[in-house]
Length: 116
Length: 114
Image (cartoon, rainbow over all chains, first blue to last red; front, side, top):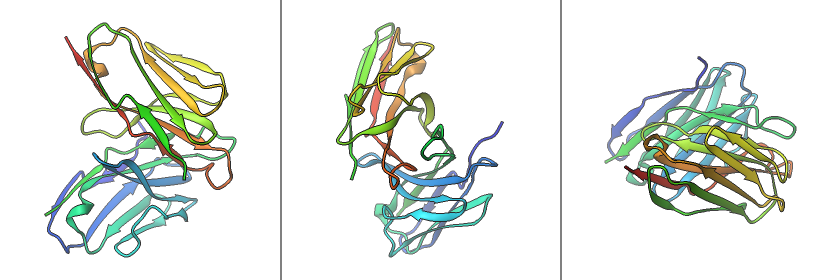
């Protein structure tokens, strides 16, 4: 049963610490997205990749956030240093979005981050 | 940037009632998707719409792609307790720069009472 896998599921850390979240997209999907979900902002797009190349990271605070895709089976989202306002659920999603395709995204279960 | 207004924000309904929610956009979309998110889980796709005017059903769920291409509706008939969750609309724009990414609505939180 193919699915997007995210780790860790839960992370509690102290302000100033580095946080790394990982995502394994569904095998064969060529596009990977990182979203952040909070009660106030809903689902916000942070960054996305197509064929491992970053296409758009305009939604990401670049001074502390970085997203990479070192290979086709792994996407990472790093926060350094973390701040309490970064507390949220971070979702990874993969699919084949784009003009002329079905455009469906498949989400992981999310990584719930709490920064104290 | 593109914005999606989703309403209502939340609903309390009794089991057996029908539910309606909608999404409107400030710009034209060529794809509308409806997702459901259960507590502690990621959003799961319910229905996908690809043509203006399209009406698609999935069990008790029915969704429509508005003629103007700026809105979409989701209806749930005869609600049951497991319908509880957050429902998101999502749209994909028609321009090359926006064709790859989805814009999500703010969500409709549905609670069903017995």
